[in-house]
Amino acid sequence: MGFIVEAEVSHDVVLEPPPNFSMVEQGIYRSSFPRPCNFAFLETLNLRSIIYLCPEPYPEENLEFLRSHNIRLFQFGIEGKTEPSLTTLRDSIRGALKILMDVRNHPILIHCKRGKHRTGSLVGCLRRLQNWCLPSVFEEYQHFAGIKSRSDDLKFIETFDIICLRQCLHSIIYHYQGYGSNKRLLLYGDESVRKSQIISS
Amino acid sequence: MGFIVEAEVSHDVVLEPPPNFSMVEQGIYRSSFPRPCNFAFLETLNLRSIIYLCPEPYPEENLEFLRSHNIRLFQFGIEGKTEPSLTTLRDSIRGALKILMDVRNHPILIHCKRGKHRTGSLVGCLRRLQNWCLPSVFEEYQHFAGIKSRSDDLKFIETFDIICLRQCLHSIIYHYQGYGSNKRLLLYGDESVRKSQIISS
View 1 (tube, rainbow over the protein chains, first blue to last red):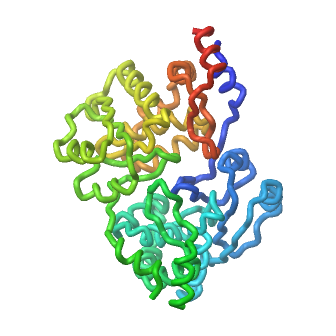
View 2: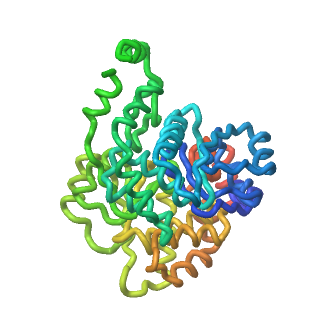
């Protein structure tokens, strides 16, 4: 038996991704709420940050996992059962998008409870920013929400306006580079860009 | 208005991913059969290769897109309607895995017709190689197959044996690095590895 196969066998740990796990983009993942049985899998992602979209406090065992792996937690508490006010929801999604688009926070995992509605809404707004056509954005949302798809979420994604997205771009001074390019998702603006930002603001 | 926003507006092309599109892994994508309306989106992926899993010839307009973007086509013709023989299916999946695991072919897109069964089977075998637990592998398959999920595919993924996977590893002399690591998916073996391969074969 050769070297490679022996090495492979020695790393034969069975990994359990959280339900509804998927890669969204280079350095961006999504899932449902990770449980301790998922921690071995999460370790392989080398996460730098987590965006958590529920108002409930993060469980101690998850906090311990974060501490021991130097993972930063960004919490945006969006109510899951009662309908959040549109203003609150917009503010949370906008805040989460700014964190999500900042490559200094990558690799990053987005999750809520089931990885369907709140996570789906955030990813949907990211896709709009990436200029995906609306039917494709909706298809992806529905992929993860399944029969639990909510028309309110789809409407929210559709009406999340370009002015808001532009404000995000303005406020973080990065230049979005487009999906799948070999460049990183967002690049830090160089000096000339910073100057034009300062002038324009 | 600042520099960044103006640049963003000028790149405001609406992109239409093929149905059932998703990122599988860094440098690996999956989808249904791409049509010309999806070509602008595919351009953003900077593809180097495509794995096409149907026996039907590739349409001329798709071939022209590949030629003009220097994308290499790897075709493994698996019958979609009639049940392929298990030996034929195994050989095709094994061949496709070797191409898929070779980072020199990345970024790479896997597709069949609907991106459900043949593509799902190939991705399922990749996940087994990545040591994902079987319920997670099945969940991902079913995500994309939806109500069209086929028990034969699940059985195929489950029984696609580790010996076969090891043969893949042997034959391409790469060392698999694990999901989500910062290293590339597969690294070329160094000299000592090559020597041990030669000795072991």
